[in-house]
Length: 568
Image (tube, helix red, strand yellow):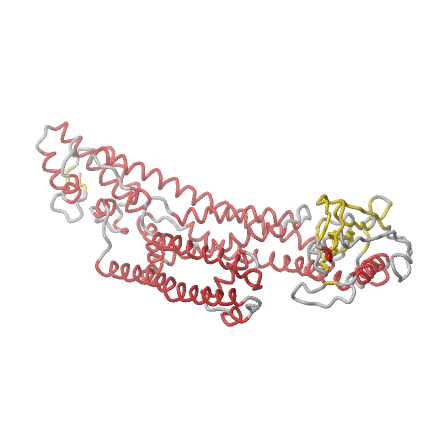
């Protein structure tokens, strides 16, 4: 090879290579000129690859299809998300309103409350509440204002199931400080048919054989199934769904503390109704939505193909550049230069397109009532919309003032990750300590998840006084520890950790701002590309102009020209 030493000076002074080539015979001179042609072509390919869409249009007249597709995709994905969000809100609202209705229907003297204070404290109240649930269930069709009905299997109605869990054996005498317990749990169940007639009396009066041994009792669970149809979607030109509600009412006595908590849970299943008929233009509107979703999928598929092609081209050009450096300069290209060819924005757009297509397909299945996975579909469409709007930052980066923010985020990201890893160790330590010490005495420290949410709120200055005031005074030692714990955490994270985090971002911002004024440090890749002085509108980037140079190697380089162009 002709370039095994002083490779950097050769990149910066291509005239030296031309003069050395001219001292050989005609065959060697022709090979040397061909190498120079390949080098110039590679420089132009690299420079064209890193141009923005406007410069590429000036260089080759190539229309920015990806830019146009991204703008169109932003509008279409946002509209699609809004339409699906409105439909999803109706589904969630219908579930929540039915749950509240069931609590008022089946829980005696229930009142809406935030905490879980609904409980009973006497044996008579337990029997009375169980009897109330059964009577309300049997008279549901006469008292409910909703379109609720019993579940039917074939020709029979599904029965209510009442089960009690208790210890297999138990003899407890707190007065003598003695007990004899078998921890094995047994279950006893019986069913109540919906057509069974009862009076508004006790369990014994209705001949329901239920006897509870409260010393051994763990819980009583009542489970039944109801059905309903969500008709409010008709007004929004959507086909109604049929809902299956599995209602579970639990009387929890696991603590044996004299307080039996009562809880109602509602498990919801959505499915397509068997027979339906809606007059008007409902079917036509559904077809319009299907066409719109199909168009969104087509746009995302086109964007996916174009971005994948660009990523593949970048990897091929990277391999070509690496091979060229190894052959002509006998040097290895650094990983930072290699990663310049992998456009992270294209990868982001590819992920966004995949999520949008999957979410759109699921949305179409939901519209035709083949699927009812609203939550999964909302996560896919929501994440894809987030990514498509984040992808707009790429095009704002073509402007210098907006590019400052993007460069700052990219440069500070590695240091921010390392800093967060160190801060997370301290944060997790405080989480575990607060949970184990303050958990029994403070409602905001009852679980690790709640502790983390509480501490994160304190870092942002939220709800500080309440966190201090809610602490119970049952143990003076724990109360004193809580003050030391909270004051040290707030002082450490707000005044030190958070300040250092902001200083880290600010320092990176000042560094990038200084680079924009005085110039960024140039890598070997940028030094190599800088040898090409051709402007985008010079006409030298057109593919038709590069073809003759590949055929005729006997060309003369004008050493006096400013851009070191080739002349035949």
